[in-house]
Length: 277
Image 1 (cartoon, rainbow, N blue to C red):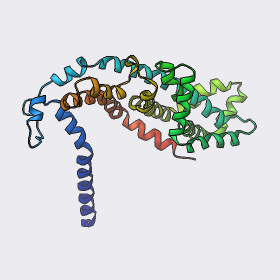
Image 2 (image 1 turned 30 degrees about the horizontal axis):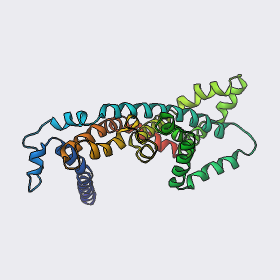
Image 3 (image 1 turned 30 degrees about the vertical axis):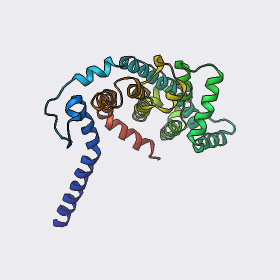
Image 4 (image 1 turned 180 degrees about the vertical axis):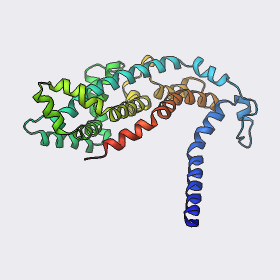
């Protein structure tokens, strides 16, 4: 009994310390965003409490640069990319998990081998293709390279394969088409995994930096991620750290709220997708 108590005390102490280490940068970011430029620069020793909190930095974050436009661009990019990707991966996962066609296993193995290609090579290839198609500084150029994912197809395929084959055969005997079976049986059963994929894709799109930075140099198509760089260079400058932190907080809050609301579904979906049998 004493051993278990000591073990639990040590475990929760370690977890508590680790939580403080992980959460401290976010706390410092939020704290700094409420400090005025003058008070922040006058601190010889950093203070862990804002004595005179101000919202001026948040006002400046929207007035110094078109942060609202960055949000709108990111919302369009995230919603359209996620919707198109879900259409692609759902049908691909269904084909690989339920349909029988010649060379299916070989094709899927080759498909999985794409995951071994370094991302840098994919980015270079996509950049050349999009440039040759004159799609730079367009939403199409931003969205098209991101509408599929080998990993998400694999995850959803594994989930679909957990649904008993007898259900599919019974549906075919009743004259149900593959499309009806997919939408009426497989998608509802696999909802936790599908919701998880949607949330992870939304987070991925929202945090996307390298590709939008490469493919856009027109401020009208900037996303919030590469808008941060624009803020540093042409907004309130590198010295105004409190205003910079306010912009980062504004950009981070939607994802934090999304994760907190759907964290249980994310964990359930990932664990379900990784369990076979």
